[in-house]
Amino acid sequence: MSTYMQKPLEVERKWYIIDASEKPLGRIAVQIANLLRGKHKPTFTPHVDCGDNVIVINCAKAILTGKKLENKKRYHHTGYIGHIKTIEYKHLMAQKPEKAMEYAVKGMIPNTSLGRKQFLRMHLYANSEHNNQAQKPQPWGQNKEDINNV
Image 1 (cartoon, rainbow, N blue to C red):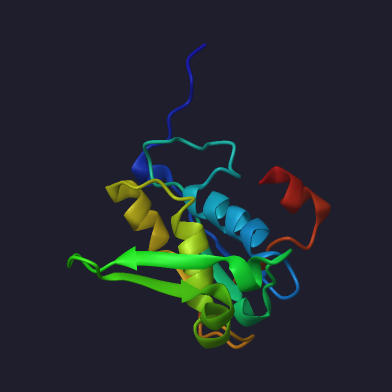
Image 2: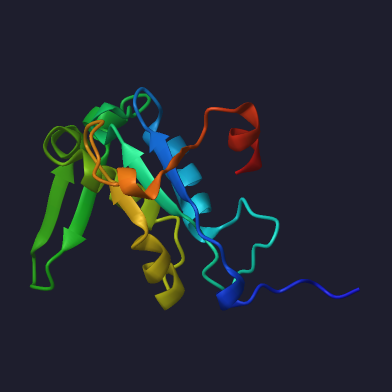
């Protein structure tokens, strides 16, 4: 018996909506990354982009456990000597909560051209309003089975 390998033309994409309010940032990021990659599907194929589209609402209400809000920092280098930039997560969550979620998910997606394509199917919103009603997204994480499958 051979292993089933999904073809790119056979992929069916769905739209899911995740509410991040009062949930840990990292736990939500894991669910988003798995949905973007398609790991929740029985036809998951690592070299094919078989993931779904994900809408994340209420990113501003996501929480960081422990003392991460005060202690955790994000670093990036501009490319110039001595130009390392630092931002604390308490400022990041106050100013751009979508960026905090984006950084968390980006670290869980493969650093390849396939991962960059998968990352583009994520839509982040700080509050509960979104402009993707036409896609008829299904809620994710309501059932115990959804959380255990990812």
